[in-house]
Image (cartoon, rainbow, N blue to C red):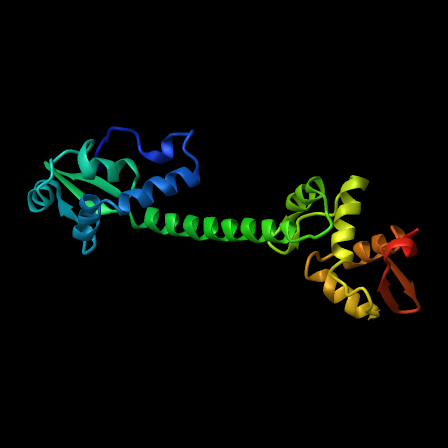
Length: 214
């Protein structure tokens, strides 16, 4: 009969204080360790018995210590019992999961960097206003239309400045530009008019500046 070996310490997924990012960092650090990388390479072709694997790699044949114990803790390697033998194999599902986490983290970091770049590049805005922009921008996307009027004014001012000061835009052009940042172009277009960041005549819009906005 086959059974999963009872392992210590507890695997990383059972420790609630370790979030996805922390688990990812720990796993990536493991992949930079030559001894742990050698274990992964040895198991790449399939399941191996613990004594044989330990002898080949000159490792301590332990499920809780050394490179192999660390990989088990991180759930990158799983172990099962077959009779008197302990068999080790790569946890490919966990590797796939970590790959997905790495991609998500990369997208988040890229979005954070882009959001900061857009906010920091907003000339004429006070630092408090830039903080507001960082709150509502994710990459180039507005995550929400602010409900607080002071935040809404900052976002609308930033959005209005995406239009050329001397340009005249047909309504469909206004919609297309706003949709680059948020799908609800009708609400934002109406707010731009109501808060006097833009003016409209028939189907054409233009940006208001200085005294024109009063």
